[in-house]
Image (cartoon, rainbow, N blue to C red; front, side, top):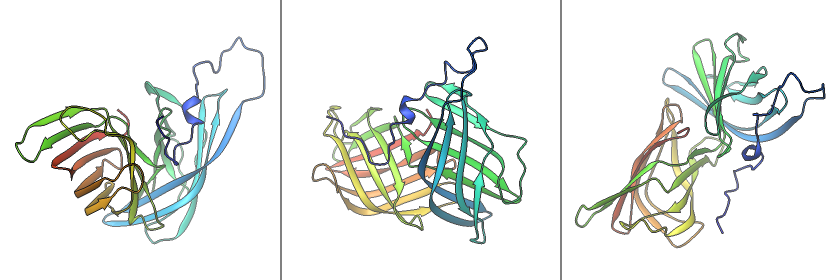
Length: 263
């Protein structure tokens, strides 16, 4: 049986807004659900980066098809603020992905021009807002559901490509200096055979950057799943946390990945 990672919350995967807001329906109270989430916020001003891990909320109005988000963040000086967005309409982009924005919201140190995306299949929330000369990017865990994986034999340079694995990352500490990496449907051979449904690595070194994060490690041992050892880990999460590329080595193969959070 395929296991579910601890950061995934199933509530989002069951959401639907396709039946909301019909004029011919009788008046009834809005169906609203508010859920607490673990958020990771990163504020960037020039080359200055401040990170904050905190609990916030997401409020979903099923009847109106809207979303409202609340979280704390640190400004570039390290001072803590609370951001609460207005209610924003969810607009279907593709499959399970919805976009939201409010171009009229202007509040100094309360968040101006909030905008973002939510994937109802992976449960990932991404949103951004600005304050004067700084930008804050807020995410839940980061999930890349179907990146292109290229597996190359280090012995004879033969390679195999697939999109069957998914990668999930979540910062582990208050400074964003370490992270958890989960790989679902781990494939590390040229035949395409899944070696493990789920493996997980904890404590991987992570560095927040102005465009996302870098994850590097000379060696890492799996803390969940089989006895897997990976080496030469160099992964770059970019496009303000919405894209990933990089590679690591395992058992005589180099595994390179490239993909996006919202395919």
